[in-house]
Image (cartoon, rainbow, N blue to C red; front, side, top):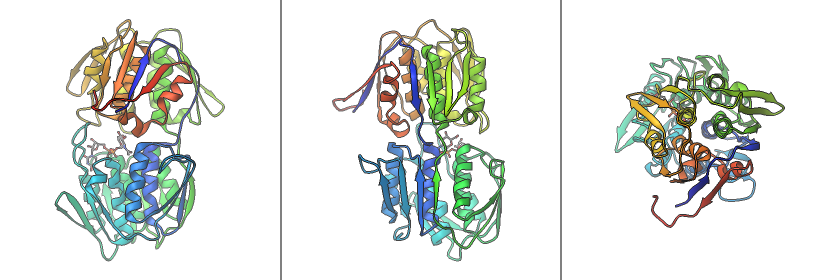
Length: 431
Ligand code: UD1
């Protein structure tokens, strides 16, 4: 199994181009199931999770054409045509690899009146139920049984519009029900809907496909169902989590990076917190320039929240940054339980962190020191890379496959900006 080896302490300098958002690409790809015409998605990131979803869609009978060289799903533009859908079952083997697979549920039931989708089960960052997806579809008239670890949804006469008030904000449930509602009879209102830019990106693409949606970007989405959707071409929104991660890479190493193909407004809340910690952001053509404002970083308090709040997907990276700041900072995680697994690994690198339930007190140290580390999820893994870039000595990050799920050519991008980082082939095992 591959590892990443980093010799830390080198300030980054140069430019890094950000790809399309993984978390927008995944729901957008499942939206192809809503029409028999071709959906063309541009700015597609090349990632393991995209590959996993391609495999799921292929087994449903979707024809996929990827523009670009390389492996099965490498490419910048993908054309998806769900004309010959023969199979409405999403099997456990694929869904367990990636929770976002559950996003095929809404589109399949809406267009075909049936779907059998494996329950995703637990994951490294908590229980992560799908009850809101299920209740929403039931409110829209689907009968859903749970059997043998599968959700079996049936709506032979089609779905009907409903008012659905989410008791908590869920990105995935909003996306699933938004897609389902586009083909339902009558009007659906999603109240307390997620406002993440990836949700809005999906909604804009659905409108381009002929859907009738208002309130995009707000917490109330109104969808008037239409008879059918058609093909469209859509460019995927830049990845704000990748953007924020590289911004923190610039800051933690005391370097300066131009982060391109992205926008500052996508990371507004993170940029506000980072500015308080001493990170300077300047908008430049096509992106953002990031460096420290005056040499040192300072501890700040931060709480994760649904968009437009500070994203949970940048929490681990923020913790790495605070480890090297002057003074203390408190991180409170409100979205997922059990999302501090990176803390003990950072502590192996000399960090001073105390975790109390959903909060972690991080006291800055002068210098982290390199160590062999590993993490059990994507964002935790990248936080260890950031720590390694700032640490004295050598850090080896194991279980690199987590990084490959969400960061395209991470080590190449960082190395091009002066980091001493390389991928090394492992010899089996993952330690
Ligand atoms: C998405 C993102 C993920 C991000 C998360 C929160 C994708 C592919 N993934 O995940 O990177 O960390 O949003 O911003 O876009 N919940 C329920 N019942 C449900 C659904 C969710 O209780 O039916 C809970 C979850 O356990 C969690 C909270 O709601 O505590 C938010 O989860 P949700 O927004 O649904 O996350 P995902 O869509 O899975």
